Length: 231
Length: 231
DNA sequence: ACCTGAACACCGTTCAAGT
DNA sequence: ACCTGAACACCGTTCAAGT
Picture: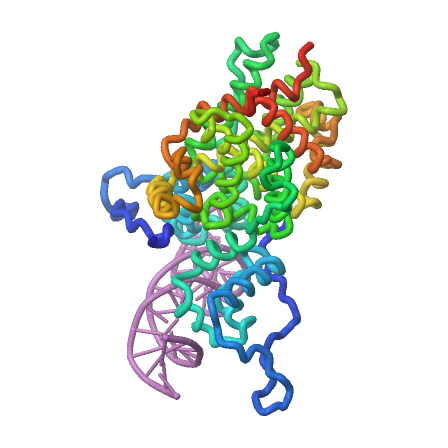
């Protein structure tokens, strides 16, 4: 089982063409926090959490190695900002002020999960990071919908956190196991050798062929059944 | 908002006393995988994920800086083994073959969460790591109990993963927010300035005073209500 | 105000060598 | 078989300077 880290050693050299060239020399634009964060997201998508190095990020921006530090305190901040930038949410108009609270909750939480799975690095980052405006916006919206659906004021925080916990767990698990499918196959094969020790999960092939999306929706339904009183 | 990393600069110097001394020179024992892992857990408990450095670990073992690499492939492996070592589980005898399946599930899952909260670094590590024997043992047991409780074979994997997701989400959230209480307070204070933007979660004080344990049990009950058919 | 390269401190890991 | 220090490659960040 080789270490998963290993540098990708990718070929694309972002070296700017010789400045004398008449070609558009890529990235004349000045640095800015927005450009830095957008490029950080690109880099994270391409190379994962371990692939984000300050020097590499600067390179990709066509900037001198250490220029970033004028715009950003440190690498942690880059993570914080990249994460929140990926979690923006706009409700589709038909769900605004709709009486269908369950549909509204489902839409927002499934979108949340989908957004994070589109940027798998976000799943490992979210739990440790500061809550940015987009994340807070989702929590606010969730609270508003649940309150409107009849959840008592005293149960509201508990309901919000339960759903948060569920979404985080499902998303983090999915993002990581998805990312390491070979590991799962290998693990399931190891299980086969140990079928006396783990007969049940060997029989059901727990580590293979799981319907993550369906599982997610089902569990969410069960949670909502319990959390929100019927009328 | 200072970076959370900062070296702890702790004082306890584990330098072995001069070898000529008559005192028991601490750690005459040879290195062994068990000692390495046990000490890694100590270090992780004391200093967190970022505090585990190979040199420091060797130091603490009274061993030469690079000796570890004979026993262990790399740092990743240390994480894998430390994690699984902390997740052993033995059912109390009264729950073995008991008809009280809900009690058995609750005991195992609450113990799982408690074990991880006792070693908060484990919460951030688990989702990315290989599944060791103790983790697999818990999944096997969970499958066995649920199957005995009447969950259909085709629903078994989904039920197991739902519970896994829920436990992971709740534990990771708790471990991280617990660890950074000041951040939560600061965030809630920031919310107060933005009460037009986030009126609901500002009103309910979402980021403060949450009953994590109660929330965990309630949600678990709701999930089990849905996952396990009544008779 | 904004950007830069040189330099520092630190850390995982390899290697050639010791017993 | 088991342990070791020196050395390498790499990376975040500081600093003194440049424009």
